[in-house]
Length: 510
Image (cartoon, rainbow, N blue to C red; front, side, top):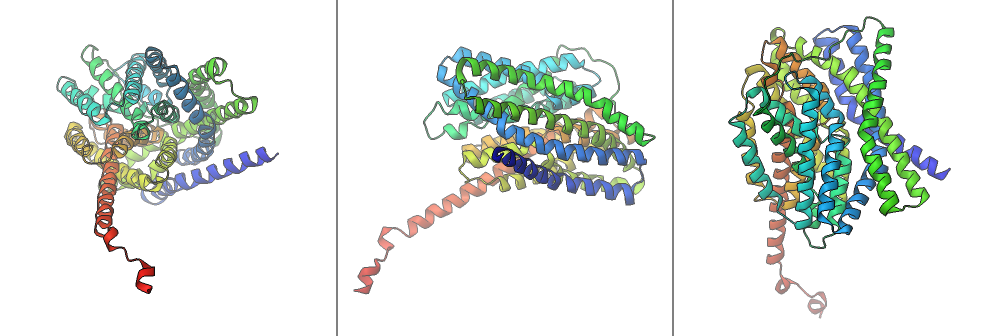
């Protein structure tokens, strides 16, 4: 009974956190719909119902991630490294990366929105990209390879390939890198990195446990860029999620009919992790019945939470996003699009489930030296800027590379002057910040605005996930610069007040 009460208290606490995260977005959208731009009542009602799904889903997901995804990833990482069999570690990492990524809900949303690449082709190519780079990330952690040098070489290759790529593939490639590290994969990958790092005893082992997400984000970018060199230009139009529900019954059926799809989708997403966990339980873990049952219950919470969250985001949030984006382009309202996008970006990062997981791990690994609150502030600033720039691109048609090239040059340059842990955290934060709220609601918001303005949706609206993934690289590393300056200042003060300046109180008293 005590365990039941503890679980109940945890769920209540997480749901309260979810309400605090979603409430600002809900208030902004409601104020816009009620007093600025009138929209069909069906859209507004669908959004409100979706908000309830999102709140409940976020709460259950975070409870499940804490009690299942994190311990599974950590145990598998530790078990693999204890084997000291490098080919085995790399092979399982590759298979795990492919299996989990192909079923990542965020990637499904993006793949279904891209008209000129077949959905199955995009899913497989991106999955292989993540698998290869997850294996590379494991090799880096085991051998202690500096992350900054890998990032420098890999992003150099990315931008070299951009010269030869059609612009309709460019934004999709960078967006693919962002959506692959969503709420399904991030808790598992982050914990797996910590588990693998335990094999090393040097001082850099903990900081090297970060960086998996950043490398796994580069794999899909390179994979799609290479695909574009051989893949013919397909046809099709970008679809929006706008659906008008004439009656409350139609709205109810919309959610009811969507649930089976997300039940199946999320089950497929969780199945590879569950199977691998069961295999390791038989071969290596051999946990007690209580610990085993606790993890299975956590997987159940994760499953239910993701189903509710994705249903709410895709049925309620996405539908309103495209309509609202189009409506705000009319007349003088278009002048509020950039500041509005920034305001939504500031709050929307708090509603991304994977961000909460990253914050917690940062505080644990750094023993509280790096606060989750400061990381969250850096992310809020980053996403606000990313959303503002993305909307500016929709309004002006500016190329995505005008922002990505200087942004990555600056972020890679900063990696040479900040502590290694901040660089790894920054590049991981870029991956986790671009989750389902960005892929569904804000992407549809940009698509709606771009279409209403008569722009090129593929080159102007797509690319928002890429901007969201890039900006934290700068803001989080700037936090690292501040921390480094503060540390040097403290060191100088220690030198000034050396042992020679210490006054012995008992001598002065004599």
